[in-house]
Image (cartoon, rainbow, N blue to C red; front, side, top):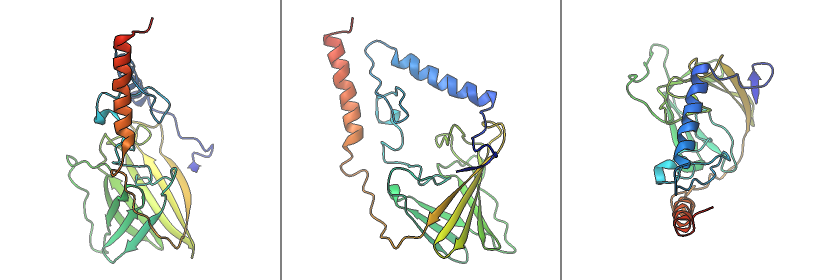
Length: 230
């Protein structure tokens, strides 16, 4: 998927970002090392806190999945999008978690500024414009909680949507965050038209996963308290 740099690899993290990642990992390791605490393995294969719901990743909590992004990346399932455009907006409805992106379009005489820097959103603040037949979406104002591949509030994302044939939409994006990556990088993913339907993603209803992770951690803690490991 990586088209720039030419070697097809995401650029290295800056020293600042490496320290940020290492500090976060160290903090979790120290907490997980406390007596009696249980840290289940997370989706990244590493120990993760489970003291309460907010310790768990957004995916377990039915809040945000990679399909919504941005950038919008395919995941295990429910990778469909419903795109609707008008003269003033483009709407992208994401099948997973049924998130919706509302992208204002700049008219010929309209240069709508981004939101104030103090206003931060998980999916950022998008502004769209047409360059020929390509929709270009410029997104800033991300939240630190978004944390796309360790990028945070300073990420500047540029997406390009181009219909290359009646059934193929080429999705390209460029990540620019000088506080995280040593250089900008870009990726491209072809999207194929489907007849549908878009299915309801009822994640919260019957979401036993997060309850089981937390209750399982409590059960292991009680077991350790009765029979501490030697």
